Image 1 (tube, rainbow, N blue to C red):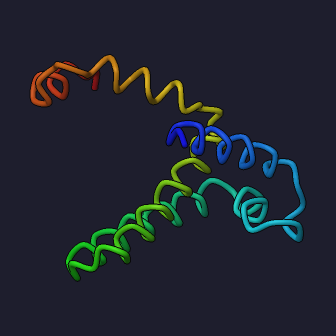
Image 2 (cartoon, rainbow, N blue to C red):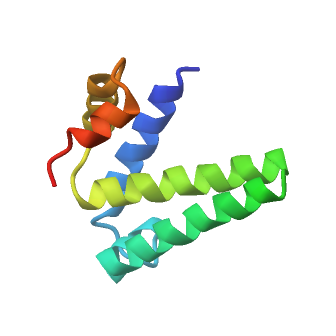
Length: 107
């Protein structure tokens, strides 16, 4: 199974949920609560990844990372950003020092 294909299918499903009713899905409810709620959930998931990592529980870390990736895809859908957009950015950075890349960003 191609990992990127799984993410593409999930992103397509999330995109369809943008116009669904909140009674139909958890994801639709996230969109209906607005950007502030989406960002709060993303932050919560990031913190949960940190806490799971501190516990050194690999299965817990995996579950929390899956939640973080899911909520990242929801935020991406909110802003109409595709996986390809992010992959292209990662590709642009490939082979570039992280210090140099960060120093070259526009403020």
